[in-house]
Image (tube, rainbow, N blue to C red; front, side, top):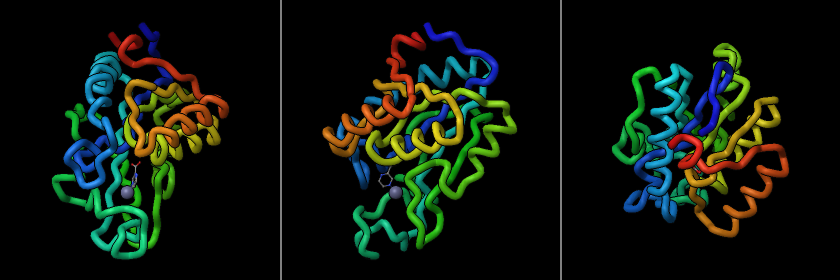
Length: 189
Ligand code: VGL
Ligand code: ZN
């Protein structure tokens, strides 16, 4: 069981229907994150610790979509069912919307958002991170978190990758940059 305390926060990265099986940009085994992250949410909420949830929140003409020459099918269009969170969050959860401008891609939850400032105001020093996808938004978010001086604990059973080799590389990179990799199922049982 992981000891949690003041200064700890949970950050769920893009746990949205469009990234789960059946969604518009389904991440293979994306649904594996739901059970461990639900436990993590219960653990953090139960101790009154802050929970942050980022969401991909694109305009329908976003530059990352094929129609605009981008690499992805349309996904997580703001206000659609596919953009909704795929797990229940407590009312106190702080939602961070990203990649909201047509001309800007933002994989990281820190990119163009108030996440860093909000974390600092909340006295957060250590971030427990899980979500989708390991090789894109989780990777970019963890890199920025470490660069900003936060400790990062990456929940390895609570992430899934678009590409399995890319996912493995991303995990190794996050570890090399200073993230601690642990299993959420055992940490928050
Ligand atoms: C993501 C591809 C496109 C992600 C978002 O959340 O990892 N991947 N947009
Ligand atoms: Zn996106």
